[in-house]
Length: 81
Image (cartoon, rainbow, N blue to C red; front, side, top):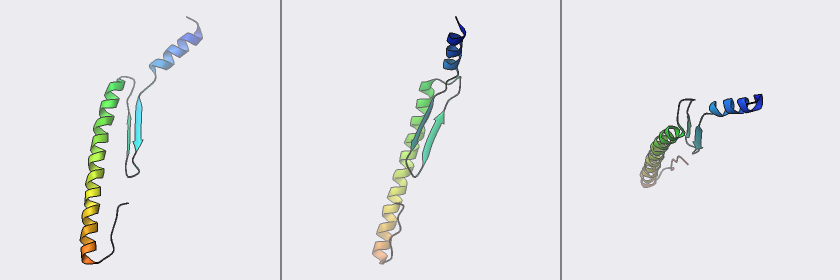
C-alpha cells in the first residue's frame, strides 16, 4: 500500500454522519462520531424531527385559537406567521 492509499483509508474511517433540517421556526442538527453508525444518526434525527413537527403543529393550533379569540373580541389578530 502506498502513502496515498493509506491516507484515503484513514480519511474514510474519520468520517462522521450528520443530518440537518431547518424549519424556519426551529432547526434540527444531529451528528454522530467515529463510533456512531449512520443508522443511529438517522434514528435520532427522525425522533427529533417527529418532536419538532409535533411542536410546530401545537404552535399552529395555538395560533388559530388566538386568532379566533381576538377576532371574536374585535381586536387585532396576533400570529406566529
